[in-house]
Length: 58
Image 1 (cartoon, one colour):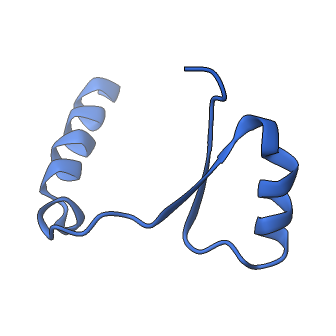
Image 2: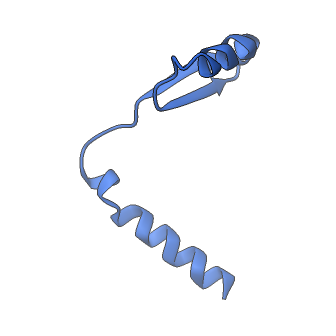
């Protein structure tokens, strides 16, 4: 039952208008070493849409 529901959700995800509209999400990135700056950016209301922390090491 759970697997069936998960399969339906994944199927719906690929059919969602977001994926077919040609629009990409607006994302701000901060390195992990600047996590406090990212939180301040978020708390101050300057964040638009998403903030993503990325690993400093590649």
